[in-house]
Amino acid sequence: MNTEAFAGSRLRIQWAKESLADFERCANVYFKRAPCEVFIEPDPDGIHERYKFRICKPLPLALTKHTIHAVEDLRAALDLAACDVARCIPGISVDGIYFPFCRTSGDLKGRINGVCKGLPTDITDLFARYEPYAGGSDLLFAMNELCKASKHKLLVPVASVVGVNLPHLETSDVISSPIRFMDGVYGGEEDEITFAVTQRGLKWKYKAQFSFGIQFGKVGIIEGRDVRANVDGMIRAVTMIVNETEAESRRLGLLK
Image (tube, rainbow, N blue to C red; front, side):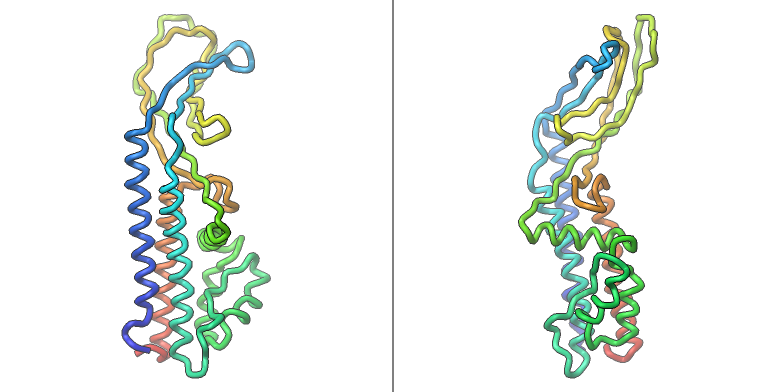
């Protein structure tokens, strides 16, 4: 194997990092520029009011695009690493060689026999230790599920998580029940969050500070998780796998 081994995997990892950076820039611009409003609605219980916050502009599709690009490049980085091992073993074709993602731990042995045929046992044992299935490594399994969704032309839904801080509030009214403050999830059915619940008609002044993040929508095991943190975790996991696969290949004498 020549000095270019694993270069393709590392290039895909770099592209994934660039896509995550693009995601963060796009998110920052969106939250700075999107119009928003605070409004009050009666609570269904008839005795309270809900203070709500709404961003009046949908999340840009570019956020989904950057997420998909990142996870697809990471998935490709692992497949390329497996193929690089196969290339330095005489008589093995890289056709049909893939990193052994599967649905359950019980499927792993059969999956390795099918898509890693001919690879050294030390390499396939290394792959198995990463537990690329549901109930093993959530990040690896979620990454593969996201890739399968995007290949079927399904967009990855994203929603923003809103953190609320009220550094100042005052009221001259008599408070018969405490003011309840809460974090919320924006991107639901009504595209709004409740950040406070008060007794009906309460006159009070407040200064609210909203912080934002973006989470995955209904995409299996990763639903409700922060996009930036989890894609970054996927990048770190894939980088470790590629590095350890290369190191093991050198130890076995497959790579000079």
